[in-house]
Image (cartoon, rainbow, N blue to C red; front, side, top):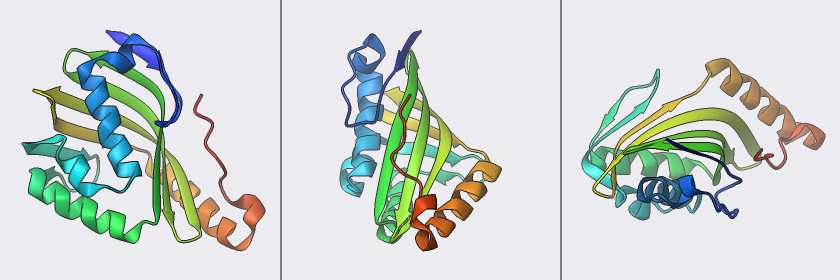
Length: 159
C-alpha cells in the first residue's frame, strides 16, 4: 500500500502514490469536476460505474452519472477538491479531501472520504462518505458568510 500527503489538485505532488495509474485516473477525475467538465469526467468512468454518495441514492452507470453531474454542475458556480491524503492499494484509491461547493456567493467546505476502484484505466466504483453534521454546519457558516463576509470560508489548508 502506498500513502501520500498532497495539496490541492493544482498543487505538485511527487510521491509514489500520485504516480500510480490508478491515482492518476482519480486525480484527473476530480480535476475534471473542478473544471466543471462533465464529459471529461464521465470519460474516466466505466459504463457500469457504481456511484455511492453514502446515505443518498446510488447512481448506476455512466449515463446516469452524466445526468447527475450535469445537474449538479449547472447549479454550482464552483467546485474544488482539496486532497489531503491519498492511499493506493492495487486498484483501490482512498482519498481524504475537503470538497468546496459554491453557488453564487455561497461557499460550503466540508470533509469527504472517498473510495475509488479503478480497472483498465476507468473508475468502476466511486463511494464518498461524509458527515451530515459537518455538511450542515458548513452550510450554515456559508450562508452566514453571504451576509457577513468575515465568516465566509476562505481557502482550504490542504495539510
